[in-house]
Structure formats: C-alpha cells, structure tokens
Length: 187
Image (cartoon, rainbow, N blue to C red):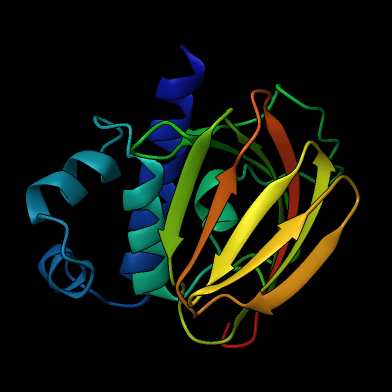
C-alpha cells in the first residue's frame, strides 16, 4: 500500500471513530464543515485522499488538532523528515508533516512545513482557542495576520491566535522550512 493509501485509511478510520464517539451523523458533520456527505463517506472508508484544506475543515469542525487525524498511535515516537505522513495544500504551495501530538485528541501538535519557492499558503483561521507558534528553520517567510505583516528569517519565531485570518508567503527562490507548534485550549 502506498503512503497516500495508508494515510487515507488512517484519516478515515480516525474520523469515523471520533464522529461515532460524538454520536454525530455524516450529514451533521457535512453540514457543519461544508463538505459533502458523499465525500466524507469516501474519506471514512479510505477511498479518498483528502486535501489539506478538507482535513483542516474536518479538524476545525470537530475541534481537534489535525495531527489527531494524521498520526498513528505508538508508544515511542520518532519523527524523521520525509518519512511520516504528509498532506499538501490545495494549491500545492505547502506540504505539512505532522510530528507529534500529546493526547489522544491532542491539546498540542507539532508539524514540519515546507513552503515552496515564491508561493503562498492561506489556511484561513482555525477554531477558537488555537495558538500557533512558528519558527523558520530554513529560508525566510512573510506572515500576514489580519492585515499585519511580519517578516521572519532563519530561526525567528512568532506566536499568534490561530483563530485569526493568516497566511504564509515564501518570497524566495528556495523552499522555506517551518516548525509549527499548535496548542488547543478547547480540547
């Protein structure tokens, strides 16, 4: 099985488990996140490989970190670059690699993100209570948060409330590597 197939089955299985634990129908979730019931059904059965945008919608709709949907349960975890699950933004500008989550439905999560040269990733806003901590590990990035712009260079960090509209822009001709820590107050 390919990584994409494995990820699709994992996301689907986890989504079904959480949705059923919360006694939520597929239609109720579909209405809440504005993704069709048919698409959600395919995701739950592992027949569809959801985009990063759809995974964010699901996570926001369930008020969980996205790493909950992307992480396999293990007792000892080692995260090496380019070996774990990856999810790509709809515009293919950003690739996200979940690193770790802290609890079963996660109050914190960590990701590596690779922002393509001369590209922009606009995740929008997350659910209330999300705080993002971002460090530029390689390259430089411009971050816009509700109209305010911040230019970060290698090893610079920023933190902000993730429930505000925000976007990441890589102005350079090389890939920028970011480290994200996201905390969830409402989990």
